[in-house]
Every structure is written in C-alpha cells, then in structure tokens.
Amino acid sequence: MSFDEYETIPSSNVTDHMMAGAIAGIMEHCVMYPLDSVKTRLQAFMPSGNVANRGISTVLFNMIKHEGYLRPMRGMGTVIIGSGPAHALYFASYEHLKQKISHQTSLSMTVSSGIAGCASTIIHDAIMTPTDVIKQRLQMSNSPYSGILNCISSVWRAEGLGAFYRSYMVQLFMNAPFQVVHFMTYEYCQSVLNPERIYNPLYHMLSGGIAGGLAAAITTPLDVCKTLLNTQTVNARVEGLFRAVATVYTLGGPRGFFRGMVARVIYQMPSTAISWTTYEFFKFILIKKAKISDDRPTPPPPPPPINSTLINEKITTKTSVRCDLPVASRSRIYSHYTIRDDVSKGQQF
Image (cartoon, rainbow, N blue to C red; front, side, top):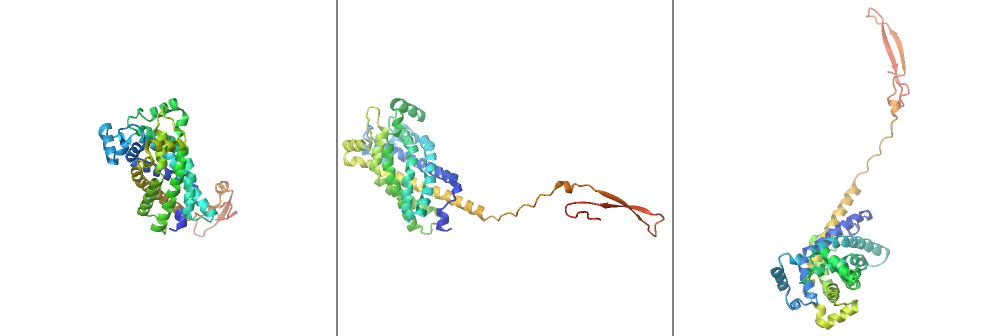
C-alpha cells in the first residue's frame, strides 16, 4: 500500500472517520483514567493533606485505601459521554484539513499535520472543556457531589453556565501548542521509524507515545492553570489565564507550574499510544474496505425490457390442411398454426 493510499481515505467515509476517532478517544481516556485522577489531585491547590508532596503510587494507594476501590474511576462516565463526539469531530476535521493543506500548499505533511491538529482543537475543546470541569470536580478529594448529574445541576445553580467554560481559553492556549508538538512529533517519528507508511501497530504505538509524552511535558504549566480554574470553589474566583498564572505562582512558586508533570507524562504517553494505535487500525480497515469495493468488476448492463403483451400473445390464425397419406385408410385433417411475436413476425412451424 503506497503512502498516498494510506494517507487518504475517501471523502465519502466521513462517518467512518468519526467512528474511528470516537472509539480511539474513548479508549485513550478510559484505559488510563485512574492515573488522570491522581494527576488532578497532584495539581490542585486545595487542602487535601499536602498531596502535592507525595508520589503517584502513594496518592493512588491512599485513594483506594480510604475511599474505596472504585474511587479512582469516579467521573469516568463523563469522559465516555464527552470524548466520543469530541474525538469524532476532532479526527474527522484533522484528516480533512491535513489533506487539504498539504495538497493546496507546498508545506510538508509534518507541518500540515501540526496546523490541522491546532485548528481541530477548537472543536475538540468546545466539547471537552465542560467535560473536564465535571470530571475534575468529581476526582477531587472530599468532593461534595454525589454523581455526574448532581455535579452538573449544582454547578449550574451556584455558578451559572460560565463555570463550565471558565477554562476554555486556557484549554485552547494549552492544547494548541500541545497538538502542534503532538502531531508534528508523531509525523516525524513515522517518517523515521516507518518511512513507507505501512500499517504497523508497533510503529504507531511508539510514535504516539513519544509524541504524547513530549507534548505533555512542554504544556504542563498550562495544564496546572487549567486545573486551578476547573476545581476552584465558589468562594475562590480566579478568572482568565493571567490571573491563573499569577495565582499558581503565588501559591506554589516556579515549581508550582510543574506539579503533577510526571503523572501527566506517564498518563499521556500510553494514552496517545493507545489512541493512535486504535485510530490507525480502523483507518487501515476502512482503506481495505474501500479498495475491495473499488476492485469489484462492474456488472453487465441489464437486458432491455421485453414487452409482456407480445410474449403472451395467443395464436392468431388457424388453418386446416388436408393431407392424404398412402397408408392411411382415410384422410386426416391437421391443424396449421401461426404464432406472432416481436422477433419472428409470423414465423410458422
């Protein structure tokens, strides 16, 4: 399979793009969700027993020991509901923009992928920002919410609709460079590890893990600011990116911007590896399905319709012929028939 065949899926399969992206997004977030819960607690500037000074395993162990085995999974239903449509639109728009930019400009596929990923983030974050607000509030220790619906209704009544999009601009500022680094690194790793661009799960997994880990490390300071905006209570009002940056510096100093970086990198590396491996698998399957459909022979055209009235036309004439046989004692009368149709036009037999 050539590079152009693998990098181009027929435009009629937009629905397939979205389905593959939705499955990849759900797999990415759900498999590593317990570690995401640990990352949220490490980053949050809230009284929780000085969690920031503890290690990843210690925080995870205490969550299970004091709050139950299912506590690290709390809020995962929100991710399933939100990440499906968010990643469906995200990957569909990414593939469309990547091909459009690379074909209509002189930019390389690596640069086109970075621009397409950055532009697709706008749609992705519009859906995922409210999801992150609900998810992170449920992940916090001593969370006052009993469930997803209770969290939505409580935040809506107490803080209004704006609370769900309080971190939207920070999310964009974080995810724009994240996706640029992410997609450009992925495409670069593919060009080194897999220059033929064949389907190979190992190459996709390694490229996705490297790209996700590098992008996560670079954007950790913005992720800390996003967590601060999402988890603040009604009494602590911080609005905007600059206020969030100032608050993080006041509460944690320069080191405060890198709280939970190890957990974030450990979370993102397998997450992006799973996401890319899943997406490339479905992409490969869809291309094979499209090629099979294109290679099928064209069926012959159907025969022209036949006039049923001529087929069902009955015998039109009947004549009697006298035949004298030498061995017969008397003459016999034989009937002579004529059948009319659209081909013979009166053929006799």
